[in-house]
Length: 110
Length: 155
Image (tube, rainbow over all chains, first blue to last red):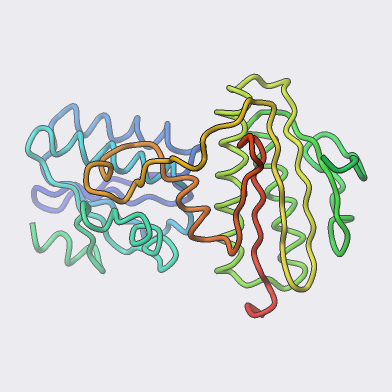
């Protein structure tokens, strides 16, 4: 799992490459702890290169959402593969996450 | 409990005998053992022509159940064994996982999709398993889960 951070205006885009699961969750938490420590308010997570998420990975994303919301920030997700999106639908997490088809759309709407 | 057949340890290094006849594997309660076993099962399923969607669902559910066994059943005590009975046929993948714990109350799990639970960071594993596998059942004590995924229509 690898995370690449880029910035467009005042939006930080984190592109994750690899699985988001119990093995990679600690590394993801560590990377995002840096962003939340500086209270970055607009964050997009690009999931284009993520083909697998487990319940631990979903929990990690929920944890980040809560943290970012706690200081008035916003988190958006983009480019979800069909099977990954399906998990958000089954668990109803689609109700609490802002999900966009593309990263461009996610950034433009901020 | 059925008698142990084809006892293999650790982590199912030679699990090809799971195809078309039931096999039993015993792994230790550690993530590395879980990962290795799941990878081996997926190799077998891929060689039998399983599609990507079903592969994703079996991978997820198998790992969720095994990680539950490690974390909650064995309470991360590495030396405690987890017994896995499985079989792969043209029609189905069937697996039973028995941990060393005292079981849990599988009949009264909170629904992770209700509003008050959506922001919780636990409680989605069994829920996902129940949605993605075709049949799921527990033994009376709740220390053994059996999951079935039908394969025939997927090919």
